[in-house]
Length: 316
Image 1 (cartoon, rainbow, N blue to C red):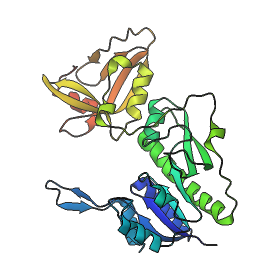
Image 2 (image 1 turned 135 degrees about the vertical axis):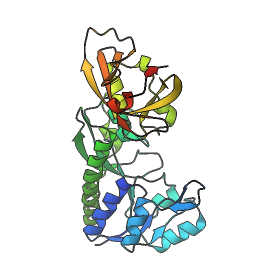
Image 3 (image 1 turned 60 degrees about the vertical axis):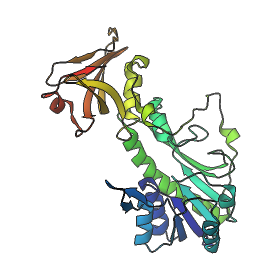
Image 4 (image 1 turned 90 degrees about the horizontal axis):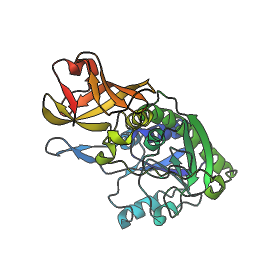
């Protein structure tokens, strides 16, 4: 059996999975992705999603519905006669879409479900200081990220990892898991397991969508380690930020990279410490957080030493 597959996704994370499906010779008959995005100063330039660009290069038909319940889109999707649908980094699907193919619709999720259901599992796992994450394939059902689990793989989170490095690791591993999952379904050997069997005494942690306010660092709420995890969990995008005075002017500073200088004797006064030339540190309970790479609003991202030349900084 070589099932007719419709692939649904938008960003680079999804392209790797689609690429591997094509490389393995699966019958991808169509791609569903987000409508082109208006960019540019006057919003007069349309930018295609990474998934659309890849699909067009490979000659795969592309559907870009504004609304997933639109009758025209549903008719076009049905005309593709999918046996199986695969979702990687896309939108929540209505039942009329995910229930369409006879072999079902499965999703690749960048966490070990049932932990971290939601839109930003990579970020929240790192922000929470986890030392392990992973990937899950599961069949879609009525609710978000609650369907029966097909396969899972674990991935360690090293102390130096950030959202970008874990994203890239899970993107590659996830693509292989998608291929493995399709082969199981194709052979009739996929045994999906209810998520309730994966629940332990550990509380379930959510992974809600991240907004700008989510990324603001409230220093008084952090220890050394939690501040370090918060910043790397949002690096490089969307990036943690703090209000700051730069040469007496209030602005915002994004922080991309830090290092920890543990010191149990630190009083953690949440003070900014600097020699004005080479280092900028914040005193926190447990030690000092050294800011290594930052970006002031409207400026370029740069090493802290470059910023300190000619810029006097102080916390607000």
